[in-house]
Length: 220
Image (cartoon, rainbow, N blue to C red; front, side, top):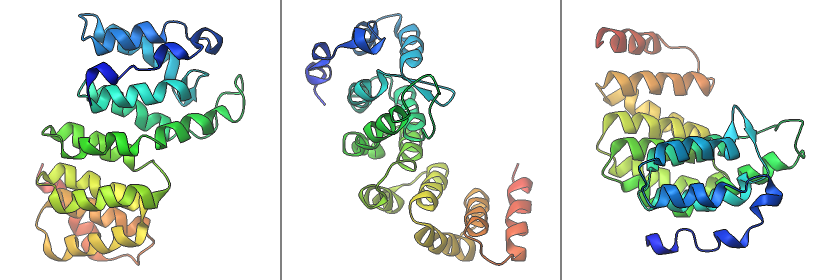
C-alpha cells in the first residue's frame, strides 16, 4: 500500500468527540517512523484496546491501523492489536453495549487489507496475521486465505498456527488436517497441536495424543 494513501480521510473524523483528539497525531507519528514511534504505539493502544475494553475511537481507527500494518509499518505490533480487537466480546459497562460489536466488526472487515501479510518474508508477521484471522468472521471469507497458506507455508512453527486458525474457523477441516499430521508427520510441535485439535473436536481419546505430548517434551 502506498504510504501517501494510508491516512487519507483521517482528518474527516471527529476524534475529539470520540475522546481521542490525539489519535491523528499518533497515527502520523507511527506512519512517519519517528524516533518516538514506540511511545506513540503505546499511547495509541490506550485509545484502542486495553484488557478486553475497546473505546469510542476504536472502530474508526481500525482501518488506519490495518493500512499501516499492511504497508509494513510496525506490523507485528499493529496486527496483534487488531487481533485482540477482533476477539472483543462484552465491553466495559462505561461504554455503549454495541461498541464492542462495532469494534470487532471493524477489525473483521480488514481481512482483505491484511491478507498480503500472509506471504510476508517475516515468519512472525505471517504467524500474527494468522492468529488475527482466526478471530475474524464470517469464516467463509477468511478460510480461503488460511487454506491457501497451509499449502504454501514452509515454516513449521507457522504451520502450527495455521492449524490452530483452521480449528477456530472450520473444526471439521482442522480435524482432517490434524489426522494427516498424526498419521504422517514426525514434527513433534505439529503433532502436539494436532492432538490438541482432535481433543478440542471431541474425538475419542487415543494413546497417540499422549505420545505426541511426550515426544514434544522429549524434543525440548
